[in-house]
Image 1 (cartoon, one colour):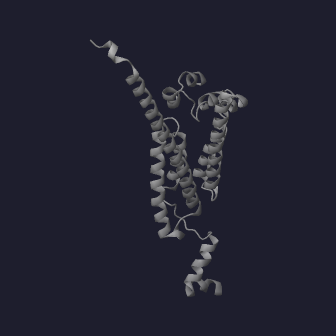
Image 2 (image 1 turned 90 degrees about the vertical axis):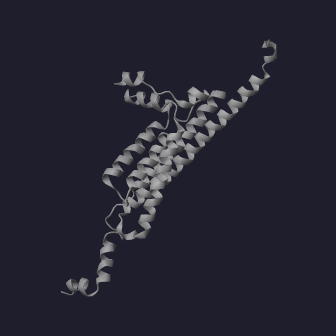
Image 3 (image 1 turned 135 degrees about the vertical axis):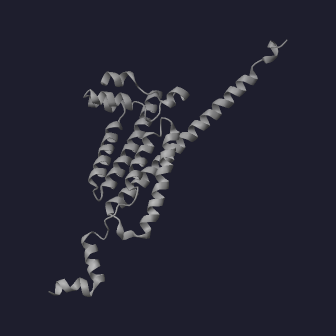
Length: 133
Length: 98
């Protein structure tokens, strides 16, 4: 009988016991946690061929994840632990993918600049004078 | 289906513009070798394809089953795949020059 009275008389303690039983996390999924994980992994798949796509996917994933983390931090105890872990894992994957994609894009730009200047110097070293009138 | 895959390979952007291999090169051939059942050939073409398939499988299992620490498994296998990708890329480039 005392046990059934506990939730009524000491509601805070009852809620604490309930949270302990459910690993101190609630039942809601952090919004977009699955999307962040999937986008983070896709950002590296597409980071080599067409480095731009990986960059876009990675940035989208990072933006989603920071928004989702802000939502999570308002109410930490109302979300499931697995979705929170998904969010963190996805954020790290997206970070790796974005950095790699940015490096690929940078590499392309540098190569194009180097290639472009090489073409320019070769073209200006060409003896155009001999071919004038 | 394998013949269709063999005839419709993507061209790698690295190879067509810069003439050199990208870290993903060989993954399509590796996939075809795997579909034919040849594990060693698949690893020879692109050592990280099988870890990548493991990562995707873990991802699907995690999305469906929603395990508590499943996200960490996905992340670590993703990191392992990335590391293997770059290591095999460096080994391939070095092997060409020596």
